[in-house]
Amino acid sequence: MSSKSGPRAEGTDGSDWKHREKRRIMREATNVAVQYVTSVKYKNAMKRTLLYHGMLGTSMFVTAIIAGINCLYLWQVLWLAAFPTCLIGFRGIMKNNSKYLNVYKFAVGLWSVPACVWGLLATAGYVPHKEFYPLVNLPKPTRFLLPDSNYVFYFLGATTLCSHLFTLAAIRKLMYAWDITSRKSKAQ
Image 1 (spheres, rainbow, N blue to C red):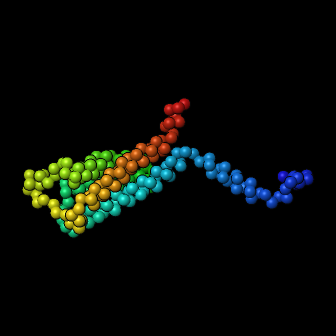
Image 2: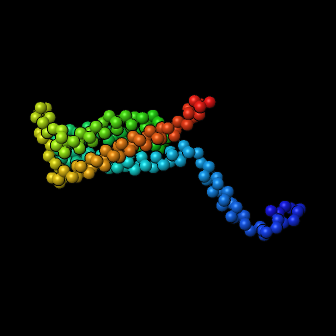
Image 3: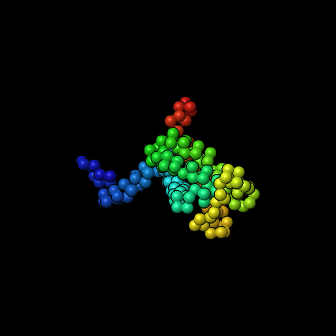
């Protein structure tokens, strides 16, 4: 390196500063705290699962509006009850607010996951679900805008269940990453 008053260092003409600057930037980029990397990773993944939940819920809600609520099975109505919590989940992610994510986690665990499991088992024939409707004087639901094949229900139910389980795991990881301050105080 050269100084103002001294000789230039041997082996360089001063043009290698770009290479040194790139190395410095790369070194600084790898020193990002782990909780921030984890937060960004799981927030992006949760946005995708919330988008999937939102699209599926919107299509089910539009179907219920067009054909009437009688076209939905009871487990679909239960799952649809958790659909508005997608907005709470999005708000929790956008604002990094753990209270909103706790509400969303509670709604997914209480309504969505059991509804998906019940729907998959009912569609497969393991759980009776059409016998409930005569008990409460409701007509049996008809399939509106869906083919007669159960494979559509299997696919949608399985992917929805997997996305909900992944969301619950991602919320757990996010809460752990966001709670770095209390972990530091407990360690001391």
